[in-house]
Image (tube, rainbow, N blue to C red; front, side, top):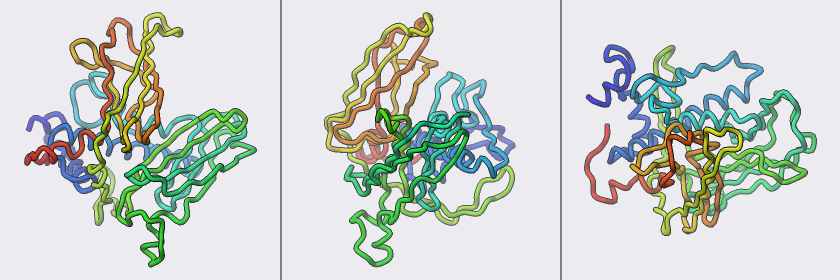
Length: 348
């Protein structure tokens, strides 16, 4: 009841989590603890909000528009926001942010095609795109090689640049030899966009893709979809925990662009043999509370393979600090954790 109180009006269609939890449970597996439920909810909202804005961006010259309701809310609430009343941005915010980067590669779930979207009002330089597929064990299943785009892309343009075929598992389903990947396994897709002249990374987009997509009919205005099949990505909860864990190194300095703010640079490294998936990073003060608001260039890092490292920057009001700790928690560490401990409480 406490959770429902922080949804919407008790007399409306969104007065509880009853329309949200079935999707989480059927697609990602039932949550056996509150932290696991929250981690899976962040994963769901990142995926859904990114897809919404990417779909519009790809089809912007044949689409009428898209409405996101809403930006934020004035008190603690489980829905209706990209960032909450504490000014904390969750999966929905960073999924939308990823989709709306000015120059980005996006994946089409329907036909496994890769699209380049330019939202700037100027043409791009010459580019190189790459697509890589990995199993949940971190083994590479596919690599496109360098997809050269010597003329770049026109201002405010969209174009298809690649098509991943055959998709892993397709040959087995057709009775052939296939790629060796489990037909029913979720796969991890990485898209990279580089400046051809310098090799500088311009954009990165990473996905978790089920073997079979959701199947549904739309319920109409202000109603949810009628599901006939949920995608099964419950194997994400079986990702091995990292041993050793992620290494986190960070340093803070004054923000050269704003004397009232500080800049913290964080380097995440994965020394384990496993995949670090959907890592949430938090700035903490001496009391262990989040430093908010914090303006991250990226968060909920989707994919960090064995031996890889990522460097991220975040700015925050100097008066809210100092930073006492930086916490990085992969989905691996939360999903399935309660099950491993023998918990029996299921969040419904």
